[in-house]
Length: 107
Image: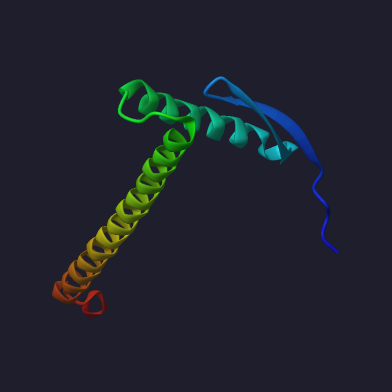
């Protein structure tokens, strides 16, 4: 049987509104940081003056954050592919160097 994580409530503020959210104690720090990040993004959108209304601001913030996440995943994938290509080139170069080495058994 799996252990049941005890959930505690924590209050976070986003755009001057308080929200009470249930969260396991060990994840409260992550929740607080996430709420601060969301608050910052929503303030940026609100302060730009281009979007009016909390619901619209929240939707735009969610879209921007989703874009950031997808873009970061793509960057990670691109980096991973680049590392794989470098490893393949290094392996090929090492094999070529080993083939060019004189046999140490002949001595």
